[in-house]
Amino acid sequence: MALTGLEIYKQLPKKNCGECGTPTCLAFAMALASGKGSLDACPYVTDEAREALDSASAPPIKAIKFGNGSVLGDETVLFRHDKTFYHPTTLLIEIADTLSDEEVQGKLQEIEGLEFDRVGLHYTIDGVAVIEASGSPEQFAKVVAQVAAGTERSLLLLSDNADALKAALPGVAGRKPLIGSATEANYEAVVNLAKEHNVPVIIKADGLDALAALVENAQKLGYKEFVLDPGARTPSQTLANLTHCRRLAIKKKFRPFGYPVIAFTSKTEPLAEITEASVYVAKYASAIVLKASAKAHILPLMALRQNLYTDPQKPIQVEPILHTVGEVNENSPIYITTNFSLTYYSVEGEVEASKIPSYILPIDTDGTSVLTAYAAGKFEPEKIADILAKSGVGDKVNHRNLIIPGYVAVISGKLQEISGWKVIVGPRESSGIVSFTRAM
Ligand code: B12
Image 1 (cartoon, rainbow, N blue to C red):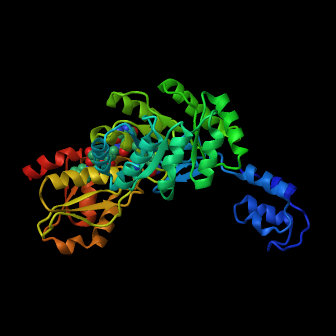
Image 2: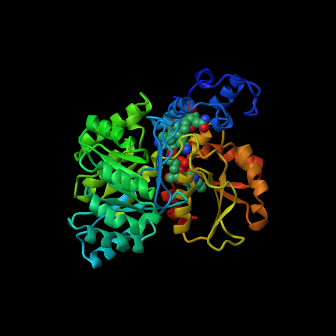
Image 3: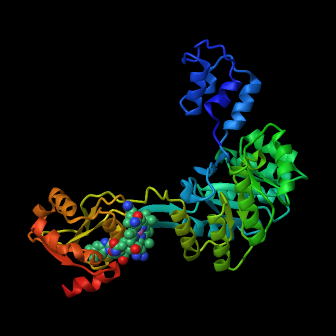
């Protein structure tokens, strides 16, 4: 919870010197409360006040950055509809250091191939987790180096043996990997190693009480770049831990849990594993380490993640301009739809499949579906006629035929009357477009 101006004011020196650029300490406190100033502007604030204000105004879950643009945490709500979720769960695929060189290479190739386009966005797997299972620091360092050479993606170096981490980290520290795990037995060595190389570190304990105590001890080493692992490896206990951590961090501002949490899947059968990972994407893992790496298994998980991490108030949209599919000509048909990405790309895919070069004109409906837009008065004949005229498509074709979605057949008469174009009512579902064009 953010501090009020008065709470901040209590911590200020109350000299009203104006050296911060604001005439009074109260005005300065109000500016800080509204996020419009920095405490650094006050030359007289005491260290104790700074400490109190810093920790009270810290976000409920710290943002932890690592690797190639991966950001964990920095979430502010329990439920997406309360505001939005900000940083999509980082997905990492594991590679054990017991694999042969060829197996590591094969796995890397598979991981590099995990690229998808969905509703106009391109997305890939975020990172690779190298797991030390060999018991040999040298072997771990060798496989870490091989993986680092074979991928640009973010890296997680995972071993409970501080010596293995010490052997592997220096060679890849420039990639800013996440390392782990600091446990009760090794946390001083592992946290100090992370601190020395300025990389974030996983703090792992068995259960929430032990985790809170270990985080507090680890913080005393003067480092706070932490990711939490509450230790459970069964879906139900992991879900319970993830939910408790998020609730305690956000609702109670319990500082030891003010860090992102990582989850590890326990299932080995790919579909069961993806189902398990889906639960953790929904609640509340900031990162997940997975075994599955086949496209067919990863795609549904990524689609779920994309849906959950889309701001509900800003649906993914396409530019509401005249789009072309294929080499259009003066006979090309014109499809009218909305600028909601899900709607637009459903239509575009089918228009492409019809193999007839076509125009598609998405109307700006604030990114809503056909019927949602119609019900909200955002897909009205007057508006469509106006956008159609302004699009200039009339100059590009030698016909005056428009195809509209079957769900809004009801607007066809009025649209025809206002626009002067012949309005053809298309099928309700985009899947009907190919057979519809064949029958035209
Ligand atoms: Co709503 N909503 N909604 N809604 N919503 C529904 C659309 C529905 C049908 C629910 C119902 O009552 N049964 C009603 C509309 C009733 C009607 O007019 N017949 C409805 C209503 C009433 C509303 C509200 C007005 C409710 C209210 O506040 N009173 C508000 C309006 C919000 C506003 O902007 N003011 C509302 C709000 C919402 C939210 C929660 C915001 C979301 C909106 C998400 C979004 O659009 N970005 C919402 C949803 C999700 C839905 C829901 C469940 C799904 C819509 C959807 O995403 N469909 C529907 C119910 C349902 O349809 N099951 C209700 C998927 C997309 C891809 O479908 O755009 O229709 P689509 O596209 C398909 C076809 O139309 C076709 O291809 C696509 C795939 O087949 N197609 C074609 C598309 N373009 C073209 C073009 C051509 C040429 C052709 C041939 C085909």
